[in-house]
Length: 245
Image (cartoon, rainbow, N blue to C red):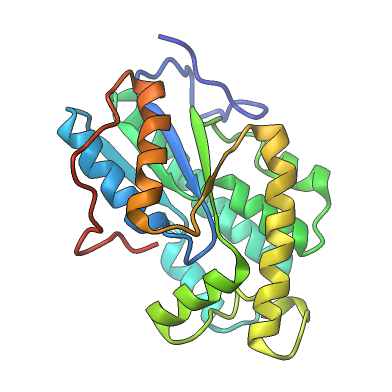
């Protein structure tokens, strides 16, 4: 059993990191299909005898509700927003991710520190400060980035919510007074950061402009290599109740 690695200094709460479980990260913007792909992957993994645990952004028992309330006010400073999300992440790392890995679960993260870092960087945070903030994070076993064009993201978000999210559109950054224009500009900035991260952190980029049933086999093949499984399944259909991102 190989010891897990951390980006920097191991958190003091974790005495040893010989975990039998695996940590897989699915990255991508809202509208990239993360929740549907994770639901299908989970069903496939469980059918192959694996116990699966989910984590994601704003799911900490400690600060998730307070963070959501603060976002609704649209008054968070960039540093406060960053520290809120960092607190949410590390609370989950210590209390959810590590215990699940220690118990042998496959942990699927619906976004991880890469999204948080990219958001901070496009908002002008110092790169060294951001790297240091997330240095105690656990290095995943694999990272998959679902890449979707900005135009397609707009279409999917409007189909789902009939509007665009204030923060996911970067309206706090003053990129544009118009929501749609700000969304395009913000998503392009994020995609540029993810392209740079891909080289450093070895993301596997997946074309998610395609239909769900076309993307899912790519994810299964990649995970099958990690787990020595057969990726084939006769039928792939969208779950009736996909997980909420």
